Image (cartoon, rainbow, N blue to C red; front, side, top):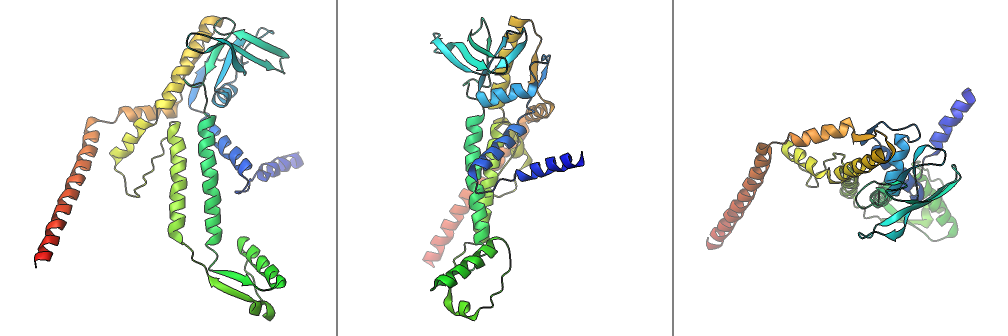
Length: 328
C-alpha cells in the first residue's frame, strides 16, 4: 500500500514541464485555466448520467454538444459536430457524432431528436481564448527564464583553442545550474579572454514581470475573475478597483444565458428539472458590481478631471516661467 502511495506522489512530481518545453507548458496552462473556471456555474437536478464536471469540460473545450436520449434509455450529453442543411439563419439542423463507449453513431435532428447545447453565442468555447493567452504566457516564461540566466553573466568568454572552448562550455553550464566553479588550470586562464557584457539589469526583469502579470490578469478578467492590474505602477483608488468589475461579466453573462436557454429546452423535451446559476463566488462579484454607487463614479471622474486641470495649469505655469527666463 505504501509503495503504491509513493508511486503516485512520484508520478505527480514527474509532471514538472521544462519552461522551454512549449507543448508541456501549453498543457499546463490550459489545464490551469480550465481548473480555475470549473466552478463558475452550479447545477441542480442533473441526472447521474450527466456529471457537472464532464458537462462543463465538454462545453468549454468543444464549444457545442448535444443532449439526447441514448439507445439504453438514458439522457446524456454527447460530443460531435453540426451537419446537414442549414436553416434560414445558416445554422446546420443536425448533430452528427459517435460514442465508442456506447457503440453508437448518431445523426440527430436538432430540436426533435436532441437539444443543441452551446457554451457561448458563437459556439466556440473557451479554448481559443485559453490557447491565445497560454501561448503568450509561455513565451513570457521563456523570456524571463533567459533573462534570469543572463543576469548571472557579467562578461562574455572567448577561447582560442578547442580545449579552452570546452572548458568555457563547462563553466557556462555550471553557471546555468547555479554552481560555483574554481579554475585551477593556468593554461585555461591564459587562453581565455573576457569581454564586458552589457546586461540590461533589473529594469528589464521588472518589465518582463509586469508583462507576465498583465497577461495573467487579462485572461482572468476575460472569464470574470477579478484581477486588477495597473500598468501605470501607481496605487489605484478603491473606486477604480470597483469599476474594474463591470468589465468582467460580458462573457460570463453570455455563457450563463446560453446554458439557461439550452437547459430549458432539455427540460421541455425530456421532462427533467435541471437548473443552472452562477456559483457563490461569482455571485459575490456581481453583488460587488451592484454596490458601486454613483458617488464612486463621480469621485473617479472628478479626480480624473482635476488631474487634467492641474496638468494644464502646470504646463501653463512652466510656459510662463520659460518666457520670463528668456526675457531676463
